[in-house]
Length: 119
Figure 1: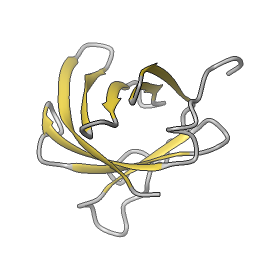
Figure 2: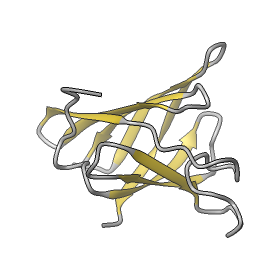
Figure 3: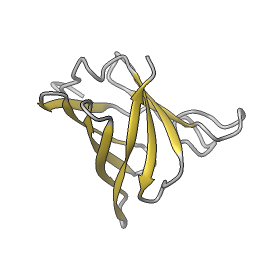
Figure 4: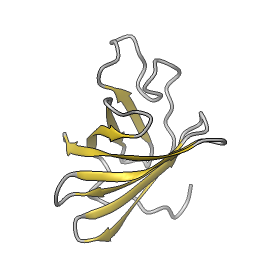
């Protein structure tokens, strides 16, 4: 994927998403935004046997992501997983809140939560 912005505040970081609203309410996912422009994620509560990527123990997914600065301390991040789901979230680094949308071919959900940069 050419010419996709990957803002430095996101690129190369591991960011933990804790979901307060939406289909993953109560779950925690670590997202690794690799410097090569791909993202992997894992369900923090899943067993060690579960593969990172799908968060559900399925095959590892490593789709490309986009990340753009919206305003001071506010970034939008989005990716389309091979499984067909898209996640688009706005991260507010001022208060560590996130808001966004998760969607598939036939489903669409608003999501909210908080996040923490782990590294």
